[in-house]
Structures are given as C-alpha cells and as structure tokens.
Amino acid sequence: MILGHGDDIYSHNKPIVSNFSSNIYSRQNLSDLQQYLCSHIDAIHSYPEPDASSLLKLLAQKHSVGTENISVTNGATEAIYLIAQAFQNSVSSIISPTFSEYGDASCVNNHKVQYVRCLQEVDPYANLVWICNPNNPTGTVTSKDLLKEYIVSHPLQYIVIDQSYEHFTTKDLFSVEEASGYKNVLLLHSMTKHYAIPGLRLGYITAHTETLRMISKYRMPWSVNGLAIEAGRFLLEKEDATIDLNNYLIETKRLQNELNRIDGIIVLPSDTHFFLCKLENKKASDLKKYLIDDYGILIRDAANFNGLNEHYFRIATQSKEENNLLVKGIKGWI
Image (tube, rainbow, N blue to C red):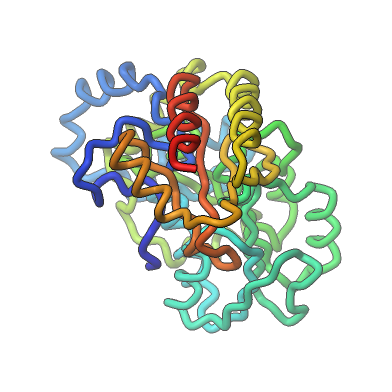
C-alpha cells in the first residue's frame, strides 16, 4: 500500500477542524444512522450474513438487476483487490493519475502494470483496463460514449470502471443494468462515498453474471460486518440520506472561482465536487503544513499520485464557511 491517502487526520498532532483531504462531504448529517446503529448494536453478538444477502437483495431491487449481478464488498477497495486476485499474473493498464490501489492490488497479484494517460494509449495485449470515472484525483469524467466504443471494440479485455463518485456528478455514466449486459465490464460502487461513512467500509461490484461468478470465487465469507450491513439497509431505505447535489456543485464552482483569483494557483477543471490545484512556484506539502498549523485545515498533498508532482494538491468542497476559511488561509500563505 502506498502511504499518503487523504483523510489522514490520525497522522497529525494538531486538531483538524475542516477536512478537505477526503473526497467526502464531512458535514453530512448522520444522526439518524447513528441512532439506528445504536438500536441494532446487538448485531455484533452474531456472525453477519456470509454474503450480505439482505443488503444484496435491496441493491438488486434498486438497480433492477438480479442478485447474481451484484457482490457486496468491504468498501470498493476490497472489490479492487478481489478483481486483481481473480486475474493474477495479468497485464493491467491503468489510466492515470488515479487512485493508487489499482496499481497496488495489481502488483500484489503479480500483474505487469502499465500507466497510461488515456484509453487510446492502452496496450492492446492488456488483460485488464482500470479507469476511475469520475476520476480521483482530477474529478474529470470520461464520456460514456467513448467508453462504450472502447468496450465493444475490445471484447477480450476486461474494463474495470470505478464509479465510486457516481453520485457527485451530473455527467452521464453507466447504469448497473446497462453495464451488466457486457461480459467484459465490471462496475465498482461505493456506499462509503455516497453516504459519507468511510469508517464502515461498504461497497459493491456489479457485472454480467458469468463475470461476477468468476470474481466471487475469491471472495471470503463475512467480509462485510454486521453493522455495515445494517447501515447499508437503513440508508437504502432512507430517501433523504444524501446531500443536494445541485447546490453542492454550485458551491464547488464558487470555491473554484475564489481560488482562481489567487495569484500563484491554477485550478484544474473538474466534473464533480473535488478537484486538483497546482501551485506555480511552491510545494503543496508546505501549504498543507501551514494550513494544519495555523487553521486546523487538512488538504490532500497529491505529489504521490502517478503523473503528478510536488506542486499539486486536491481538495473536496465542504460548507461555505469552511470553504471561505480555506481561501483565507491560502491567501495568507501565498
């Protein structure tokens, strides 16, 4: 595992009051979920369902597919490692810069790993293609039409499309029902991201029945704990469990505009609520330290993403008050 993911609050002695380092809205109201889990705490006295079957059925209903098209996992990260394990000793092409766990999981399972910038650069002999859509850390979306064209023209390659941030963009993405019609497509989903519950670890894979059967051979029983299953069931049945996306993206645009007015910073385009910034002459690690020490603000130093360098950092939009504080802090440092 590459050290240096976002949300490393535990790594700092200073108290963090505003967390921009994780691609999650940290002010999500989870009080109803907390009360529900407290009332179901007895779940820890029993083994959970081996395959999270009760949650599986709800997800199948939500997406209008069969339970054989879905596998619930301990976060999207377990899904990544399961797929890499199922394709041991393969050739993996990874569209980068992107989430480091695709490369880590591939290396652990003896893949030959190739980092490329776009689908057009993918090795024709690759067994697996990994693409994050919307992409982490850039926030950009690869068009569904382009992906469809690639999928159809490369039937012998398996395309892993990580849609963990699918609920934070207005761009057109693959539906579960649509993607399940292709034998060479695996979609990854994150309830962790969608509902802002990273401590519970909850995700799932959706794919064609034959493809998922091949992956599921490597899935260990009880990988999803009882409280996570209870949380997933509760949230799926609660209609107001997510934020207002339109207002969130409007605030994102406002924050980007404010940052763009600061000399020495370039804000890169994004299709979602998080985005990259580039410092023209300074190091992101120095800015990160300053913001922690003086403001209790945490950003994501993006230097360890493949293809980026010491000048890049990533932030995810938070509340208007927190965003204003971030802008003030960066202005003071610049």
